[in-house]
Structures are given as structure tokens and as C-alpha cells.
Amino acid sequence: MNLAEQRDVLAAFADRWGQAELYSTGSQLINYPGVLYNVDGSSDDPQINGESWKGLLIANGINAPCYVTNETPEGNSHPKFSVGGHMTPNPDGRVEFGADSYLMPLCSWHNSKARDGVPFTHTNTLMLKLSGFMEGEIAATFMARLPSEKRHSIIYSGGDSPMCMDISEPEALAAVDGRISAEVLGCQPSDFVLLERIIRDDDTRYVIKATSF
Image (cartoon, rainbow, N blue to C red; front, side, top):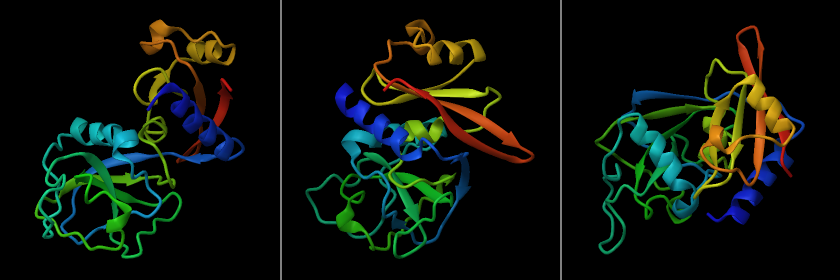
């Protein structure tokens, strides 16, 4: 994803959720043996968002070929682990806003809208249960809302795809003033969205505090 595409993704995120309180997110290793379906409305382009979701699986110790055991045609990408595929037990592929979904290794052939509604069987059962689902979400905006002791997180462009990092109060103030340091983020960000955590009793939400657009 080039920088212009990353800018478009971050700008669309900020435009859509700028006035809303966003759900916190979570990822939990579980064993799920049941039939699963591709999520309708999840990010399905492995060249754009697949690597980051794949990285989340690998970071949690899941690095295996495509889980799907359904009979598949020869000459496609199966069984390569191409992407982290969003799954649901709902045959219609629907996941309510803020609800749970599942993430498991998929090849790009199975991670396709052409396979929506197809029941996937699998013998590997270890996967991630994801909470806080938002339709069409990229990995960086999801991971920016994972639990943290820090009050702010930043989603930014500058590499091959949008990245995120938890940052300190002084770093957040610097971002608001347009002075976020390349030394902090590891690169000079082209664009960013700054999130602030709001904790109320046992509930955590997020708001967009600043953007670079």
C-alpha cells in the first residue's frame, strides 16, 4: 500500500468515526472446532491488509498453512498461509458492530468474497477470538485499541502499511502540535490519527483526539 493509499484509509477511518466513541478491542487464543464462514464486511484484500492480520496471528504463536480442509481446486494459492482471515460461525457472514469474530490462517483463494457463505471445516482449532469488530477494519486501527496502560495510541503511515504505537502524554501533545518525532515512531509519519482512551468504570472506549489531515 503506497502512502497515498494509506492516507486514504486513515482519512476514511477518521471521517467515519470522528464523532463516535469506538469500542476497545481484544484478542484471545482459543480452540474453536466448529464450522466457520468468511466474515462479510471484513478486510479481504491480502495485498493490502493481510500481512498485518497475519502478523497478529504469528505474534500469538499461530504460523501454519491455511486451516481450511474443504476440497479445493488445484493450481490456486492453497494451502499457503497468505492472510489472517476473519471468520464467524454465522452462515450469513454477519458480525454485529462490537461483537466477536475469529482470526485464523487462510490462503488468498479461501479468503475471497467468492467463498462467502461456504462452510469451512478445519482440523487445526487454535485461533484468535477478536472482540470489538468494526466492519472493514484494518489491523492497525484494531491493534491501536488493544488494552494498554498508556492513555494515547497513534495510527500512522510511513511504511508499507499503516502502523500503530502506544505513546506517552508528552508524545501525544507533540502529535497534536504536529511535532511527533520520527525517533519515537521509527519513521517520519506522513499522516496520522491520534486516539485517546476513555475509561468509565469497567468500560474502555476510544475517541479520535487529533489527525494530520
